[in-house]
Every structure is written in structure tokens, then in C-alpha cells.
Image (tube, rainbow, N blue to C red; front, top):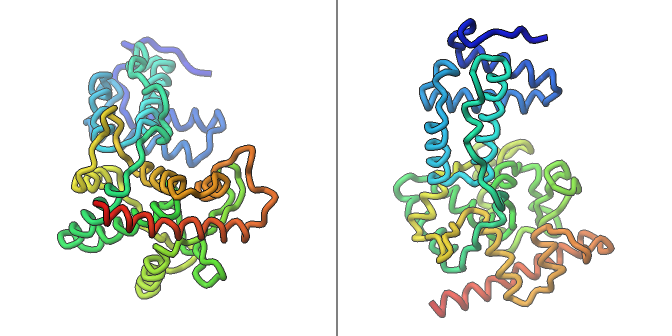
Length: 319
């Protein structure tokens, strides 16, 4: 049972002490160890950035400004809400322990509406081309890091993989010697918990082979080694800015998820049947192709992806 103290009896409480007690309480409530550690590490990092030594240093206005800065730097609304919710949970615990007179972050509001990334606008073919070209040019300045991002955008465009999925992609998931070169994602990484194979489009096959060769040369081609190094949202937004990609007339910003939407739009404009578009994007629905073999489905998806080269070349000629 918790001992009850008045605020005057408790005095100041170190942030580190409060975090240790908060972690202990979350373990008691059977939160996973990974979740507990990640949450506490995140709050400690924010505390260092904002200069918190004690929990009495936490101010709602300061936190609101910091969260707003994260959005401006490219963090998604979903990330904003996760950070805000985690901070509010922590200060709520501190108030329950009577270390604070009330939850000082209770008034920090979450962003309503679609925060999954699905609300971001799709990139146009011209914008995608500008993004890749701008990153290629930046490669002359900062070298290999830009080369990796150029490849990241191409992989995202022709696989439909989300940024988080690309960040978890390992060489053990990539099969270049198969009859149909593909990326196989474990079921644990999918929303429906089912393993899925994504054909590697002709447009990026040589890119992936080049990446594989470089990984082998650097002894980083093991099954557990990352294919693409993780890239932070601030860097991604800088690339978008260099490419001249701006919010549309309704104020919707383009994000990495817009590259995935570009693929869905281009497949639709190419006249690809909706069943194949859904399979390419790994979307479910009433007309799911559960009755078809995976290899047959991959053949159809790969053929649909191959059509995009002609469309993109036509768009470039028209521009």
C-alpha cells in the first residue's frame, strides 16, 4: 500500500527517483519490460533536453511548445500523441503519489482525427523524382548517408513498405536467388499476423543487388543485419524541403507515407485491377485473394509494378 504524504512533507522529488518508482508500478501492472524501459528512457531523454532535474521542474507550457517543435521537425501526429500520453501518464502517477498537487500535464491535449499517417497526401510522380534527384545531389555533400536515403525512397516507392517496416528490414528477409526475387516479411510484423512475400520490382532489382554486394563487402550481410539504416524524421523532412515538396492547398503535408500512396495511385492510374492493387499494398477486404497461391499473386503484382516504368517515362517526357 502507498503511504500518503502532504506535498510539504515530500518536498522536491528527483526525476530519476520518480522514474524508478513509475517503472516499478508499471511492472506491477504487468506492462512488458520492453515497453517500461522504452517509456522511461524516452521521458529521461526529454527531461535532459528540457532541463528537468526534479518533477517540480515540469511545466505544461514548456511541454506543449516542445511537442509543437517535434511536429514542425517532421514527427507524425501519432508520435506526438504517444509522447504526450506517456508524459501525462507519468505526471499522473506523480500526482497519485502526492509528489505533485495535481497532474500538471493533464491540460496537454492530444491531436484528434487520423494520426496513423493515412491522412498524409500522396506524392506526385514529379515530386518523387525531385526527391530522389535532390537526395542524389546532396550525396556530393554528405556522401553515403544521402546515397542510403536515395535507396530508401526507391525501395519505399516500389515495395509500398512503410518507413517503420523498412527500418526493420533484415537481409534474412530478402531473397535475390528465388525464381521471383522477393522480400518476405514475418507475420509478427504484420497487422493480420500473417507472413507476406513482396516481389522486388524490376525498377529496383539492381539497386537491391548493389546494396547486397556492398553489405557483403562490409561484412554486414548477415540474416540479422539491417538492409537500410534507420533515418530520423528531421532528416527526411529536410530532404522533402530540398526537393521543393510543400503542403497542398488544404495544408496537408507530404510525409514518407505519401510515397506509399504514390504507388497505390500509380497502380490505379495504370489500370491495374483493384484486387492486385490491394495485394501490392497488403490491404485486406472482402475480395482478398485468399483462394490464390502466393506465387501466382506475386507474378501478378510484379507485372503490375513493371507497368509503372512506362507511365513514369511518359510523365517525364510530358514534363
